[in-house]
Length: 236
Ligand SMILES: Nc1ncnc2c1ncn2[C@@H]1O[C@H](COP(=O)(O)OP(=O)(O)OP(=O)(O)O)[C@@H](O)[C@H]1O
Image 1 (cartoon, rainbow, N blue to C red):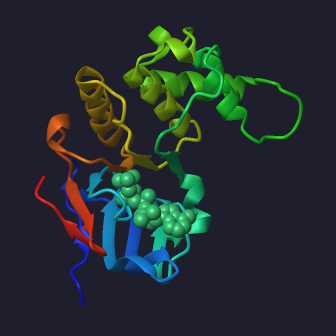
Image 2 (cartoon, protein in one colour; image 1 turned 180 degrees about the horizontal axis):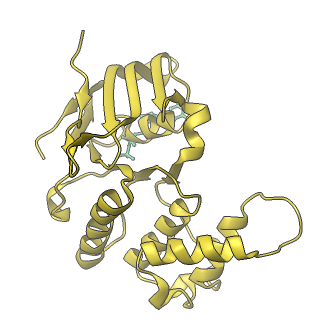
């Protein structure tokens, strides 16, 4: 039996935090193309984990499996103690390569539109919407540029708006697929500080994929490497 890759440790209060992502003997892939075998992972409340690995070895597919968007071939994924499809509501997701459909729309309106999502009924931005949107913008430090059009924002500012969208539903977990893409060094540093603060202050669990750890000066609780069908601890 393989060791469970775990970031479990006692945080701040001396009380062990609860597991929020539990993966056991997982196999994933597309038909005969297996991407991951016998993967075990346990992430706890308030922990920041980084997933690295070469192009095309399955990072996005692994993250989508945790979200319940891609099926397991074997093994199991539990989110907040429930099957991935049921636990998904507790996850905020920032997909890879997110684009701005309407560059003229302000950042504030973009986040408001995302809040509405597929809620039914007339377009009515209630006080709940206003509260959720303002909270999310505050959390990512965006009120200063919320009234600017999305098309005029820097790469880092756009990613912070996308992070605000991922935070709208008050998730317990954030899954971020390459959130540093198209972000300059200063913007990367701001995002790194922001993610560390979200873990510490909100006790969010964050799992993010990235190609390189060093340039971000990020010290995760757990660094993972996915390559050749194996998920292993990497040197952070
Ligand atoms: N819908 C699909 N059907 C078949 N194969 C797919 C599908 N989506 C992805 N793949 C293949 O699965 C493999 C893993 O893709 P994935 O996007 O998960 O890798 P990745 O590690 O995230 O890559 P990158 O670092 O380039 O983003 C690739 O070989 C890809 O071509």
